Image 1 (cartoon, rainbow, N blue to C red):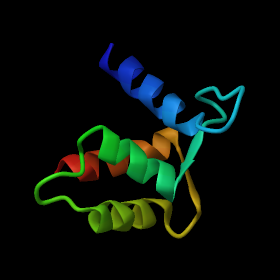
Image 2 (cartoon, one colour; image 1 turned 90 degrees about the horizontal axis):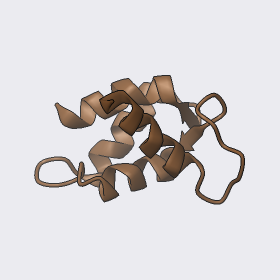
Image 3 (cartoon, one colour; image 1 turned 120 degrees about the vertical axis):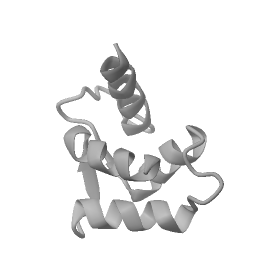
Length: 80
């Protein structure tokens, strides 16, 4: 159940400005990942927008997009 909720949120943010997005073709760029973190209240207190950007860049290894599987370590890093 919890993973389905995370998948739903990921697809919601991947679908911004797009149609026909499913989990298999969903991906986020850095700004959508930051928006997900900000609106999910992950960016607060000690975690800053710059931290989120750094996490995204580290997990994507310089690519511009992240898929669902790749987002899981990034989301875990925001929680640590």
